[in-house]
Length: 346
Image (tube, rainbow, N blue to C red):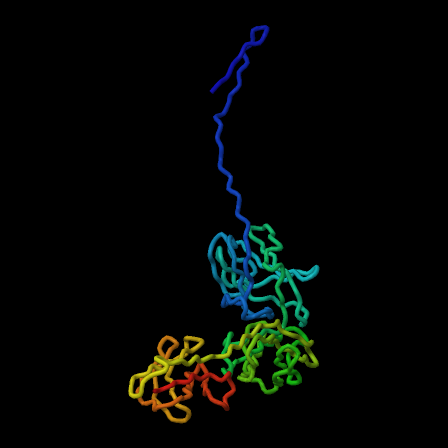
């Protein structure tokens, strides 16, 4: 389109105007990290990340596309993961990236003592720092996990330490002089020398030693469990993060109905379990005389009997356990709170 106007003396001035066109501009959404954890996406399994372990970032807008590759791979789909410790940065090897999850190999940081580092995500050449929640993650040579958690009193609990050494770095090989000590708060539970450990996992450039200890002697309540690595002639000492381990006391509540009852009439004896996931069977006793056996269904066992004689009778139970719920024997010599009910027969 031409636009013209007159000037004096008469001169025709014209200009050419191009049609207006507007191109939409889309702002790239900033990534958001909601959790940094181990590759199983379990927030409490590894309180600290060890060099050479596979870890994961969980969040939103982490990458614009999905891709996977065998490490080492510093950049994948335009994304980098950098560990910042002081004035130094360490590039992680990427395994998998997507908008919601990035899995990577924790880089070697030249300090065997656990330390806080922050994670910076580089996406499309732009740095996004301070994204972790909380703002820092712990990187150390000692990882730790417990199972099951929570557990029942008298149930075996397995504590596993993961001690990582870095292959290919001078003086980093763990020798047989070191040991790990499993701790409950400030109380040592067990010490195991690495010379007795033959279980390890090679994840180049690292080797991770796996040291397990099983105990059923933890009292009921909450325990602060952690592990301490003594170090050796080549490696510094290190500690893991702390895991809150919960030990619950299983309970059986016994009651009967009707109570009192008439001689020869049927009485319902009920044992209710906590937790309700216990399975198996329960033996009911009139003191030492066994009245019968009932199957546990949905945490409750019911026995109908008309064999209770005249008088007052203390009713107790015996439970043999199911592999998860430990055996319980209610009576004067047990280790649990005494539970009984008194059934009166006229």
